[in-house]
Length: 338
Image (cartoon, rainbow, N blue to C red):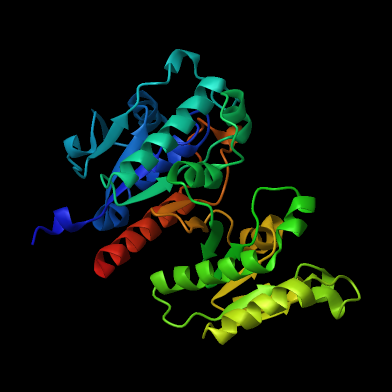
């Protein structure tokens, strides 16, 4: 067997070229562990990646390719599926730019297309800037919704994973008022199913799932709200009847402590900040974002574009390293199933 050829091919989208995305990609691809587990190709503009190697002091060469099959995956080289859509003389580092927003969007769109065609085994995304995205005319709340749109996916959610804490969300990028309305029995059921499946793909044979309540103290038996009794608990009981090891709803102010101590393998959070605040407090810069429910694998860093440090060569690449390694693990898991 050709061990090199058996490594999964990962596409890594460039992210907003005015932010730290290109920097953390170059740093991550210089790590021996990343090279050992996958073959990576960057989707974006080769001139951006080439420029970044200078101020992060990387010795890696940058090679422009027109298709994935042209990539050579040499240990001293970064192969870039070159979209040639960034004018370096007009790129304002650390600032919102329609050009940068469009380049980031195109990198994601093309990468999804390559994944759906089977040219790459998994996708990893560097951070995009939502304001730049909208300025370029692409009205998506974030990566998750872009992936859902271009894969035709309706049942999806976001999981953040770090160390022994994993969190999935009933709703993501909507207002808090809309998030409350999104807590329905069918949606909670689906997210529990997605959480269980994700854990199994990560090697947890019988995942233990804890579900957070929507209201303070999980409603306190209707004193602070009724969603726990009318929506969440019936969904939990229905999943338990199907053999899923799930319990709750529990108060959100204690469930993450219990998960951290090892009582649960994954927590279902009712809305975006309920789940992201505890995991980022514990592991910011080291957690990985995984989109569940897609027909392709997508992982991402747990942070934004960090415009304030873009171009300074001081960005921390640990989350990108973790996202890349997890994508490689998930891709290898897929091959094992096939």
